Image 1: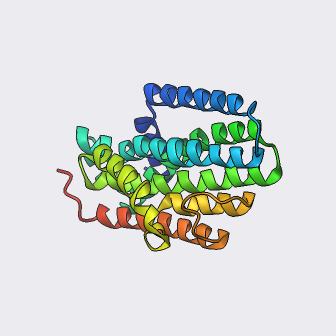
Image 2: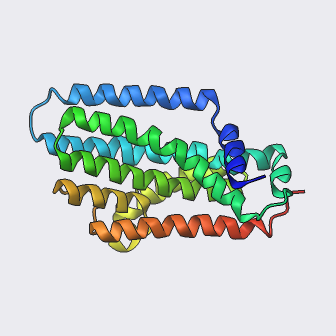
Length: 235
């Protein structure tokens, strides 16, 4: 089995129709909310940035990554089919890489497309669109790596993942740049805030720092998952 075949196998396993339809409905609701907000007065750039932060970075990207990321390895482990992937004659690190690529290839478009459409309804300036695309892609990519690992290391990945999002990302990270340095949301929103030149909660970092740290988070989480493949007990 090649990496591409492994990717397709994991992708089919984690993308159920119910999950896709559910997030499609969320996307339509978000775009509808943006259309309603577009009729309000005030600062259109600020409203657009607020929508990206609330809808893309705090809701769709993390929740979609939680659902699809934990399922990519967690579902096969839970139903016992993971052993058939693990015993294939291929380097086991490829399982983690394929799971991450499968998750990100679903989560990124599900998060980015409706967020950018909604932001564009509020303000079509280049800085808003660039900020929306890049920051939401950062969040979707990093959260995907986090939750692929969660699905691998715990049988209650959805519960622990939801707790992580609510407690750390939305509460603990507000304690300052030291704690925020470990937050996916802080780096994504920092890129957005610096791009649109507006102050947003948790925007502690410069754009280069946010990009580099987000990429490092992905590498560390995928690397951690790949390292655990050789020591897992899947019997």
